[in-house]
Amino acid sequence: MAISEELAAQPPQSATWQVHLDRSMWVGGVRGLMLQALHPVAMRGVWQNSTFQEDPFGRLRRTADFVGRVTFGSPEEADEIGMRVRGIHKRLRINDPDTGRTYRVDDPELLLWVHCAEVSSYLEVARRGGLALTEREADRYLNEQRKSASYVGLHPDDVPGSCAEMDAFLKQARPGLRVTEEAASAVRFLLWPRLPSELRMLSPGKPAYFPFGALCYYTLPEWARRMYGVLPEVPPATVTAALKAFRLGMNALPESVHDHAFTPSTRDMLRRSRERFGAAGYDVSRGLRGLTNPRRWPKAQAA
Image (cartoon, rainbow, N blue to C red):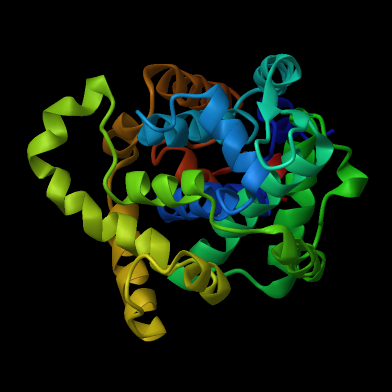
């Protein structure tokens, strides 16, 4: 086993590091929530078992914490959060008023939809924003995300592991998607969210958030935007240019500044990750993002 695989749930040489360290992830995360909301039962599960309607940004940060831990956290940290998430999901239920049925939150079909909407959004937004990934690397990213899916209780073999498999899954899922009242409300909240208490000092700048929310919305697939019909259409080239500008600006932020967007526990996890890699001989002077460059690895690793 390579030393890097002992230091983090995913190693620096993975395609996952390239995608998850890209700051376009913020757009991909919100896009993923908007896409997930189109599944009626999955959306009702969020609505009935969380504070999403009061704090959608908080849900995004909790998702970021999970993604961070199963990427940059130690194998033990990844196992711990996976066990915690599975334990929470196991206890929760969803009442579907349309059918009168009760679903488990850890129903494999629901977990698979949430996973695929999320990771496909990360990948598509990053590539559209300018992250240079080949088709083979994009396939490798989705294959690596099978491991992440296992932390929530999915069997890796049941999860799309290539772009072709992901496209086929999303196409197959489309007939069962629709805009419920909860989904419409979710998109409105994501376009104009309530900031969590620890970020209320940013409230004066809240109007500046709308262009970000709109950018997330416009990166949705055309069929999803057509279903929502919330905002008027704009040329795809304009969306791509805006996404590239956002990505360029966010990627220019020092890691120490950018990390303040995360919860304190996430920041602590990232600090521990940097310390582990530094102690193992990696050059962490440019943070975790710098470790995507093999020249910053120990010689034995880079060889």
